[in-house]
Length: 133
Image (cartoon, rainbow, N blue to C red; front, side):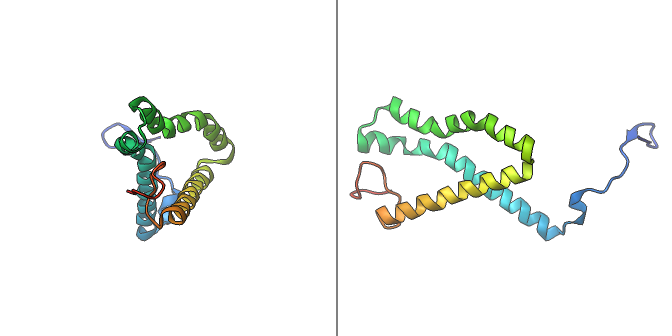
């Protein structure tokens, strides 16, 4: 540890991996991180906004609709230890990259299915193309 002028201690200056990145690369990483975080929040919390459509369109009870809305959170809880194990074994970067890529692939597959089923609009289960969001 190094002594500062005021008598405190400061960590020695060390080179980090971010020192070699350009400003553009840092901003692009920040933009990608914001996009991934926003997508995951939408996936986790967005289902709750479909509760009125489930209740009105399918006659689903509020208890059942609430259970459906909580499923993404339960999925995260159930797989938390698995992702933690993989992170410890393989490293945070690879696990986060693969997890984000798998989430994006699932979203693309879902969108392709929505396009095939509802001509590009988001189908609501049980409405069979009569009414769509």
